[in-house]
Image (cartoon, rainbow, N blue to C red; front, side, top):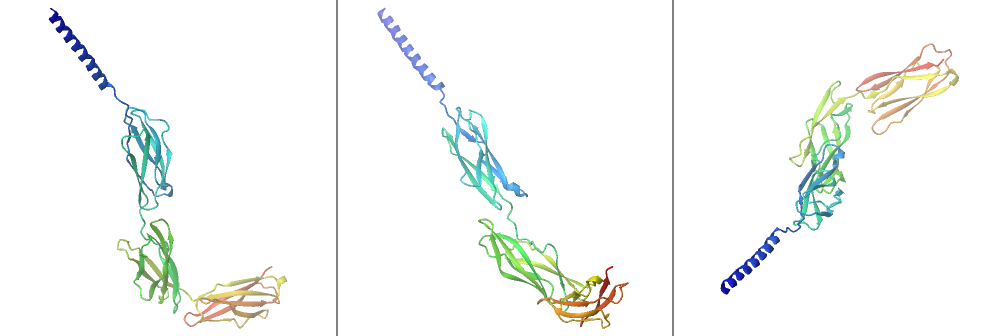
Length: 355
């Protein structure tokens, strides 16, 4: 009897001890520790520049989420580039399962692409490093283009002379590269383009330079009167990928003498007086004479050459006295221009009396 009781007591004690140990093991498994964790919903954000200048400043939105089981807070955000500035960030800890947004003001590159890394630090620290890439796309790098002439380049010239016209070609090129523009193709004889060396440079960015090529057009031939000649010009670039940008040179003839009829108004109270008339021309090979039958009250005081190296200009000074009788109609003076090629041109000068 004692043996049976002793055996029962031993088995009961073992069962009680086993149950207590099992309860402790079960309770330890059900207690879940606090594990906050922040995840990046948008690990890569891309921004592209538009056609307008305002699109160079844009806002990148980074979406984050607390995938842990405890609150987590943003401790700091670093961009490592002055082109990206943090505008808005969550100020309070994120509860488990909640999402938020981080706004970063970005200045896009003018041309080409750029990558900016954004580092996010949390409290407590997240399980993995938090990194977001901002891929910034500026405008496509422009190819050389003509700024002047805008369309056709018109040249007016006289027979037997050489016309010279200057213009500019502006390009955007890679900084440190050799100049792209190396010459021109012109399909008209006696018409050539000469570049002034070297081109004028202006650094735009760390990768881009603006070059202004100064060119000079020289035409030694002239079309016949009432004839227009067209020269097609194609700039030659050292890079085969740069498209040709042809433009036209329109060459036309023009009269060598350009003078308009002159009108002189005088009042009898202001007489005698002197008045001046100007005649101009591109050529020096011409002569000027006044009508021999001038009225007695009109005299030619002087003829002075006041032109420059490329243009001739004559200043005629007339001395006008009071006519014997009031003028009922303007008095006509004929100014004769004689040119070996153009011939003789009569330019009228009218003298009228104010009443």
